[in-house]
Length: 514
Image (cartoon, rainbow, N blue to C red; front, side):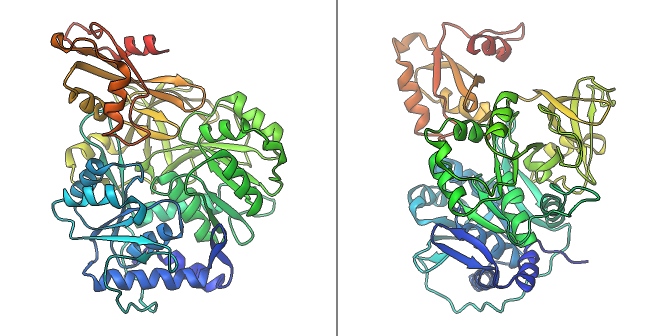
């Protein structure tokens, strides 16, 4: 049996050849044109030496080039390794090395950090700089090749690796969640065909006539699956925002007649509080999804009172492609809930002994189903730990009511989610410990009205350090971490609170930061 996620491009091009597939400001590509671009890039990669199963990293913003590169890599039988465009050189090098990437495709505006990361990578053979000066994915720094857009999609199996998404944990370095073609296809199919359907009523799916806004970063699983892959599977149009800016977002939603907006709670908060928001016509907005963090109920109700749309909340992780639970239109929507398990996926809550908890009892969310990753790339021990007793253990704590709806109550891990982006404390702490004046450091998330959580650092200083301004420590971390990771708040204490074993007590620091 063969399955390549990129075959959805061939399928949609067959049925929707002249329909608009991609829209970016005044530029657009039909499905037929998109298919030609994807095939051409796949042929280019093959001529450049990429073989089936090779990892190819992409460092691109939300634009047509991302989609062409993503599906072109898959079409060639290779594996996509998305890299956050917020990454600095050190972080890029880590991802390239850990994933064993052979090529890096980078946006020309990111040349400095891309080059720095590429030069520190062991086995990455070539850096392609691209822009859209001659259309999507114009390669700037290599001799053009005579690639044919008749290139045939390389056959892969459903279990073959398709994408490696780097996700943070609470210990060690970020890990690459390896997702198969079937993992991603099954989740894209749900997102396209079953998110908005109502039994015994008109069948609603993301097909021609729908316009999906790619405001979420496409290097993240949420944007990839629920925006890009779902839209292109069904024949809808995908409209790009390079970066989320509230006023610009409203302009594009009005101009392109957006029917589906998918965002994290921070985005909804900012849209509601943008001056002059009432002047924009969002009358075509039909569906709205929130994920990445808990949506404040007041924000949900205010948004729905202003626009004739129901916000549906869901839950997932990079390791689950990502959607695992979702509130749907054909069942009661419970505000504050992440919904019940999606079709074909089994979600439960376990106690510390991995025994299932009862209704309304708090336990760790565990998941199994066709959306769950193959494992962590090159990390068999971490994979085995995550898949104890055949279930993927998320580290998130929740309760499940008698009707099967889940409610997140806490995170077992110390992960910080700032504006929908994961921030892993140890990575920030390692940078803090490299500061010459810092004796000890701990990082926690402090509640924040706009971003959900703000990265907050507590440090104590070496006796010989003298007086050190907190702002100078902020500047120090800013130079070495991506924009969403560095702490905006640094507090200097004489000593950090510790338990009997000397372990720093994050719980006590959270009390201080609240």
